[in-house]
Image (cartoon, rainbow, N blue to C red; front, side, top):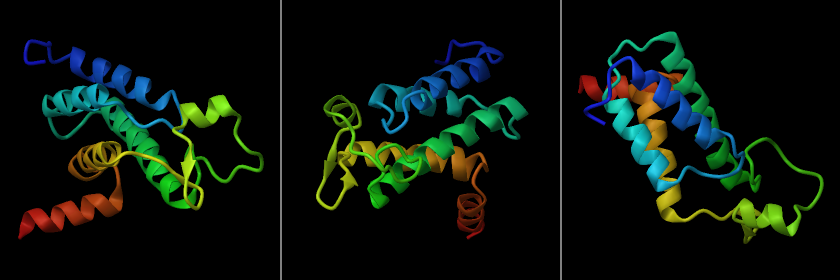
Length: 138
């Protein structure tokens, strides 16, 4: 990543985030999270409008997945009125217990890390940004 030219970083970041968000209900893989983390390390603040939009998209995806995990919604886009097919359940990792989305601990950790980077550090979530700013002032 260190050899990637600076102008290519926002474009590549956008492509990786698109590959994450193109599958509703599916958390990012470890490799995708590693790429986002590495590319974010090369992004300077303040971020451009394009990078800001990319991070906002990532925040929405991650919060939707986490909300879905708590609300029993497998794709983070609201309650469903029909049962998913066997293929959809397998793709979305199925449900467990009281209708909660089954995610492994590593997947939840990745979502939280990406939220901290995009939401708090790069300021794309007002609540996280405020908490991050107050923590940094201490």
